[in-house]
Length: 621
Picture 1 (tube, rainbow, N blue to C red):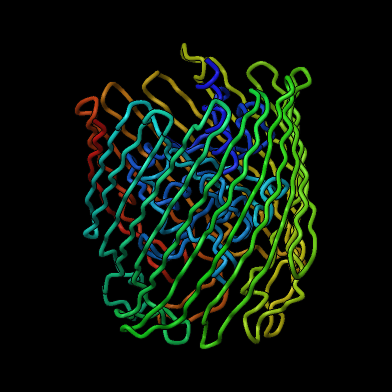
Picture 2: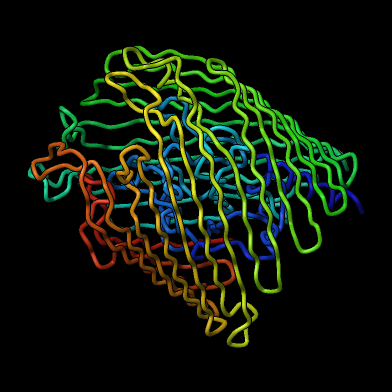
């Protein structure tokens, strides 16, 4: 029958347009790297896949917790869960990594730098997370200089009704729960997820700072997600994605930017996304898709009930794409149109700005014998500064157990609406930030200890140059700087037994201001991680270690006052988790983070979590 295969292809098209983190296995299909389902061993890129269920079993509740374990990624958070979290990928800036949900960009138009905050997105609605590091603007446009993170949601499974329930409790008076269901009803596939998180947290002000008094900074986060796919015929499918996230977070701002206790301040934030689309596959090798929707982001601060800064952003988008498979080759192409808007009040000033944008891309991939080739080119046109053209090309060569690959690409970040339109500081004439990068890597898998994948090795080197970085020149935004980044990583996995896996990774990041040769802030030169994982019958356990090396940061003295930029010391975090399948449908788990109770500040001036534990149960009847 043609219908099931066509429907499956339609779902893959929707997604593409839309354990210890490890490189994708050779038989795994990756969507994000090429915007079409592609075997991992055909990609000229560094790809990491996170299984969301495995991440939650390790006690990772939010997106930033899962990302922090990926080599080459840093996700420092300014305190407990819910506080602001930035993502630094391969040495790039925090607004240089594009975050997607089912292919929809989540970067927040209301924030000063248009950056995505990874600290408030829960993992209950996610099936997997694909991370592609390196320049990806040729496929995804602005903000993808350091890579793309794509959260792929759960979709309808076999059977009419597959419920799922999860609940956990732990340190800091933490409670979290997920209630979800998915299934297939005739031609309709659905997946609905509701989840919540509540915690009293811990004091954001470190104990070393004299103003510390132990006042706890908690958070409440809730989200609802629905993913629906309807096959109208053998060739035509409709889809609907809806997602809403609400959060309330306590924080401690000082009066003049210093670190101080403030028990009455909080941030309220909302994010609402909907997208509707249609996929038409007139032939097995040919498909087209059209979709459109809206992302709204609202955020406001208050102190003792008095409203402070307000940030409201909106992005309306429509896209059209197509895919044509010709034997060993695949052609893709598409176009997108966006309207962005900001309406904010910051430091008493009104900020109003709108911008139209359109973009078009095309890509090709295929094989010439053992060599896999990929290429893409894209042109974007923004109201205000005109066009930006980016491209990427790469090749992957498979020689038995060894795969080597190389690629070259360009990327850019458009100035944010805030940078363009904020009174007194904005500059309408800003140019986009742009980068060029090349990389080369290798992966190898060898039979050892009687296992086909007994030993896995990988290595990567990437060199990047960034021009027109946006910063302050005097009292206004301007294109003021350049940067150079050299990044290298190595990973190894050993399986001495079928039930035991050991992994270790090392990342070396040399990110510097090209003019002054000074290291860029919050980019540690050295980062290590290791894990021992056991899975035997109904029992599974992991013991992990992560070291973040010394780095430059904005520093605060022990009185809580800003003390310029300085070197902060390395820190180590040890985590452990275990789970037990009581039955086919019930699994118990316990996890501990920072089990050695190290005192550290992932962001200087903000306390990171002391030793803590989470105990939970997952029920999937």
